[in-house]
Length: 298
Ligand SMILES: [Fe+2]
Image 1 (tube, rainbow, N blue to C red):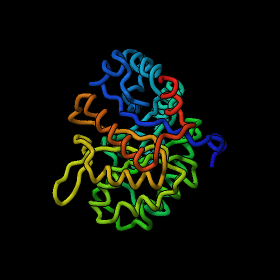
Image 2: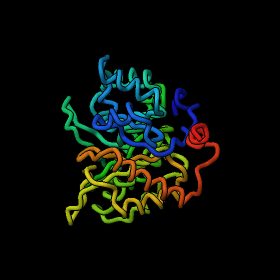
Image 3: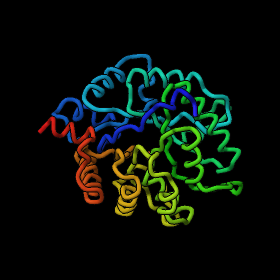
């Protein structure tokens, strides 16, 4: 583990949040603050030198804790590291001071071509060595730990020597990176590849997960596609229940990227998640920032 990230403590539980989407800017910033504990921004939308996006972000930052979530880090790519991208990511992180910076365990393209998709990797020792070295490089460059998310997959590699959960467990153990556990992605991949999603869950170390994503998918009959254009389905909320039992209080958010509904609908889904968490784990811990914020408001 690199010296730069060795001393980073596990981030606090933030409560229940949403992905910030342009459609909801005015409701989130101009009206009374909705019952949202924190917001996740898409890093690439704000990796600009100035202007309106950064002004908006400044206002968001004054009101809510923020985490950064990227889609183009391409951590598993065998191409040369993209230091132009990393420099912009670092500038944004230094400006926003997010609770953490996440991206996906995947690659996005090679030879300068970004396919704008989160592509799967073979789970081999060779790939693990490569990704471990890349995570060290990025964490040292950013001077902060990364948080990596499991992606939905539709194919598997014959070359794979270990499960996805073993790969993620080794990665977090060897680099100190945190994990973003996307409950829907686990559900989608487990269905597509025919394994029990609880096996995945039970294979991940209990103390490394700092964030949950909850999202909707499309059921194509023979397979599921991770579309983020539907509400979270009952089965994914069911798996979330198991995830809470294993990982405890973990910052949770609804991730919606298409067919964006009114904010009130996403708030209802978030309330469902809150209700499930309270049912599974009891009331919010007294020492959590959420509890302290709620007492300050009361
Ligand atoms: Fe996700």
